[in-house]
Length: 142
Length: 142
Length: 142
Image (cartoon, rainbow over all chains, first blue to last red; front, side, top):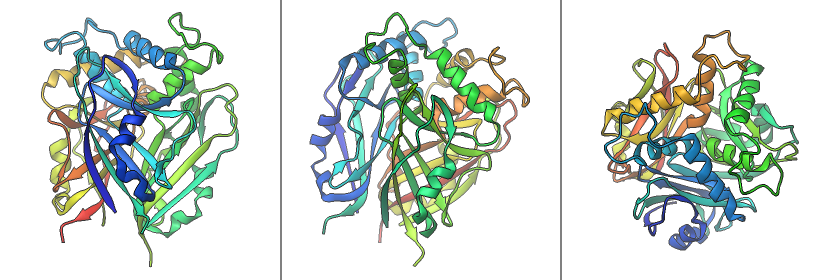
């Protein structure tokens, strides 16, 4: 059994954002799957998806600080500079984190750990509304 | 055909650990799948999974050294410090490496390259026993 | 419906390479899938796969520059040095980027964003021809 849907996230500022609830609200069909996998795929190259701690907001602040320090703007060796100082670092961060997540489904729910949440990693200053393709496959309740 | 099972790994010290055999021993059902995919998903935000060289143990030592140097403890900009100096670096490493692997299955076995093995990346000093959800889908032998 | 095939890529020099077309040409069966997922899995530990910008070639140049600077050769702490100065950095880069991609399929095509392409990240100076296992599952047109 297959299901695919494109979600349009609300725009968010640069940084790491917990979006588990927005994703789940967008895929009402999830509850039909007894067992399966959900693939979340972001259709952009300057934002990414990751799974991390769903409790302390300071984890998200520190992730943003870390990646800004270790993937700096205006590095002297960048050649791709015409789209602004936040663009090339955004591409690098996108490859470090990745464009997709694969999350197991059990009993109609995402089978995440207690402390796990889905993050949108918005690497641009003004990234706008991002598109995520959700593809679910699995066994449904009859 | 779908199969899902939660494995509880034996506790390991901080570092990179080859766990291919422990995973395979835990999923006896793998041999029933002629073709398919295995998703390994770690239910934690301070440990991760990766695929790397299954031969020289010094690759695992160097990976640990590298990540300790480039994701340092006690960085001055960390705000999330109450859970110990190894906690925030663990969250960063978890997002750099990722929570899940997707490995093709062929003829009842993981279709890995000759030198590939599955690693548990334990980023905490005392992470304890980690849980991995294994989800397999594919075509079984009749 | 399941499909699996091993592709042998043509050899490429060290660096980031756009291989979307080579992959698609190798999987003619893709057009049969109305909805699904394609898993691309590289069977090596010194090369990786990522998704990034398919337009400006300077993005690929800057990615190579970035990873060479932040995953240096000849770091004093490397113990795994017998296979050449490019080997241990290649293993680290492979774990940072990852061995596999999962891309949604819609209407017989990869459901990528407008600016997304599939990259081979060749981390060795002379990596030779790399093998990628493509596994597709989904609903086919009857």
